Image (tube, rainbow, N blue to C red; front, top):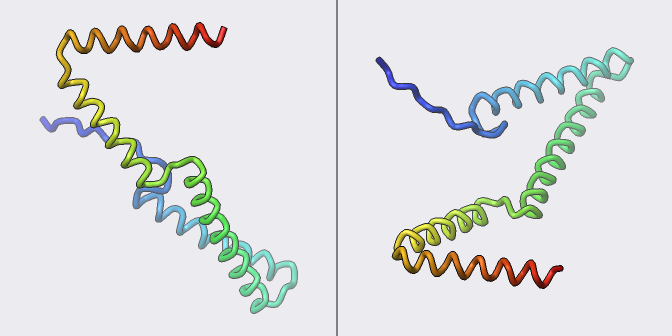
Length: 121
């Protein structure tokens, strides 16, 4: 019997299949736009230039907008690595605490929560 392999869910655009689908989609879009422009009577050379300009400009603006979105939401690789590192350091520190230290820390957190909720009301 072969063990079941658990596959992690990757967001769209991060696998080979997704990249190939995006490439085929953009190519089909370009061919469709060019054919559509030729169908309405635009010269084939001009149609090709227009489609090339629209696709390159659209893809460039789209790519830049995703970068700006990631920067504004702090979803860049470095920021994510830093959050992961800080989380692991805190996890290690919690594992190194004795039971008494952990109880004292939990009591301190509860006290801070009560003080914070008392200040807000």
